[in-house]
Image (tube, rainbow, N blue to C red; front, side, top):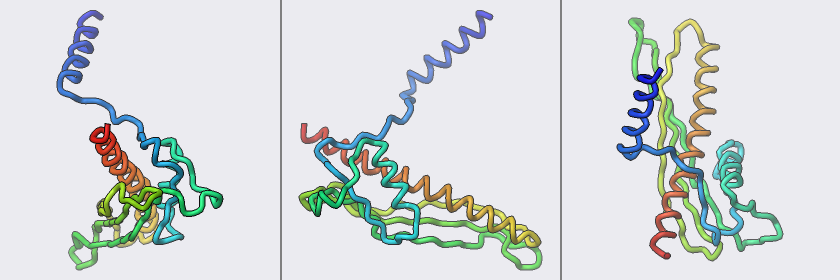
Length: 171
C-alpha cells in the first residue's frame, strides 16, 4: 500500500512542478457593469449561451432601465461550413468537416473597446455512412450543439484573458 502512496505523491509533485493548473473560473472586471449580448442571428442559441456564461461569471444582465449605459458583447457574425474531406469508392462524400466561425467584440458602457473585434474558429470531423442519412443528421446536430457551447466558452475565455491582462496593467 505504501508504494502506491509514494507513486501518487510523486505524480502530484511532478504535476505541480511542471506548471500544470486547472483553468480558473471566469472573472470579469467589477467596473464593467451590466452587460448586454447582441447576436447577429437571433435564432442562434449562441447569444443565450453567452448571456448564461456571463451571468454565471457574475455579470449583471442589462435591463430596459439601464438604457444605453451598458457594456455590449456583440456577436458580429456567425458562419457555418461543411466541407467533404473523404469519399467512398463510388465518389460519395463519406467524411465531412464542420467549421464554425464567429466574430465578436466587447464595448464598455462608455463606448470604448474592451475587447477588440476578433474571430474564433472551431471545427470537427464527422462520418456519414452512405446508407444512414438519419444518423448523419443526428451526428451533425450533436456536433453543432457541442460547437456552439464550446464557442461560447472560447469567447468568454478570450474576454476574461483580455480584461484580466488590462486590469493588471491599470493597477
